[in-house]
Length: 190
Image (cartoon, rainbow, N blue to C red; front, side, top):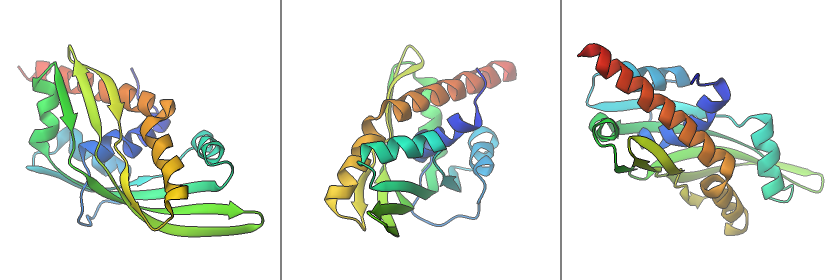
């Protein structure tokens, strides 16, 4: 299965956010750097910055979920995670991958009547992916710990991100494509 740019964006917002998130700033500014490190890197840790920019369809869904209040959210995930934790997914066909909570910074654009504002917020992602028979069957990005906005605003966003079918489906598609790709690479190396 080919991974589209949109799926890659979902992966950034969810799986690679969970597969690879960190608390220290890194040097990468292009999401391709994260994918390159994930696929070909050899260091003990995967470290990169990953920009998360929702598609037009995702922005429309976010606006719908927040009753028109949230118009956009652009985020940067500073990724740092042990490579061994990610690679354990390939060795265990029945496995629950749980990333440790990792920070993300976002600029959220809201509109109330005619007043438009952009607010910086922080939060964490701790993606969880359940594997059965070597395939990802359940996924959640595990967004939590949102700071910088009231709970009234953060609750629907957190609920949408963690439970929205589009995000979870995108995570499953991309995780399964990555696992298949990595297994083929392992088989070819034997």
